[in-house]
Image (cartoon, rainbow over all chains, first blue to last red; front, side, top):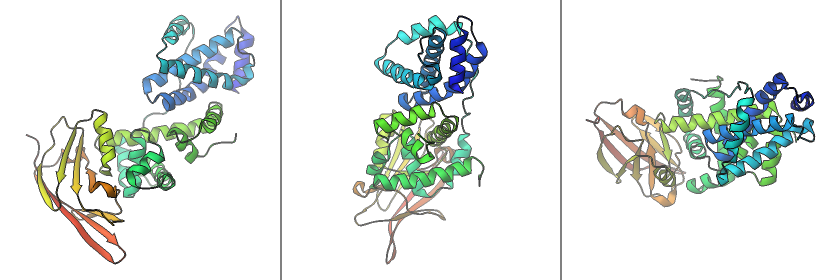
Length: 181
Length: 177
């Protein structure tokens, strides 16, 4: 589906297929933001990365510079890696690109999942076993891998993963409604 | 690659996968509505846990190393280090971010500890045996609503032959004036 949209954008040039561009943006932008959040661990930087990657991708499609538009996901993946590296180096060229092309593109509204209500999450955390709650806090407060959490608790990484998995399932069921408070 | 299960997505989110596994998952979810939705759910749960703790909405037993992480992030901590047995007068100023009860306790040979607060029992709490303490982060949001009161915490070692009290700690709380 993303490939079809990319092909439509490429084939429409020099005309602009605004509908295909908006649809492609709507589909891919939230995923790119997740990539950014995972690598940059910062909401604003993740949003910057999303905008930059999507604008650059659509611009390259319009210019016929994406060799295989049907493989646009691979292209976006490559862009994500490159822009992340640039952002880590503090490269400012991306800002220039945003200024240059950002205004030309009609950015579609994207559906970013709303934040969970922390009071509800807190009520659900209260229902977990003690160790499950501790492992989730130690894991997610600073996004710590099981090895590091295990060292601080005197547990093996495997043990932490088992507790963490169980805890997430319980928390998810509670927060998402199954057996919620 | 086929769809990723939730445990793998959590491992990815926390940076536990090697480079090639990570790249495979990323190229997959960038093109997959189902996996990216699941990953967004992992992100939302992680964010919810972080905000619930940061907002002082939950009580949790943590570790000394975690306390140092909080300190290094610049959070304002109010720590009460209580000897075993012992008592302290305590209060929470408005600027405090995290309240910590650091219960000093001999932990040699202890395998399981239950924490008893009033008439509630919290089984098998986390501890680092080498640290010689159990660190409780009470819900600061709840404590702030409380009038002057006395709170007793007990640590109990649960062993094959039964239980033994490790320590009793009394907190005389007064509202911040």
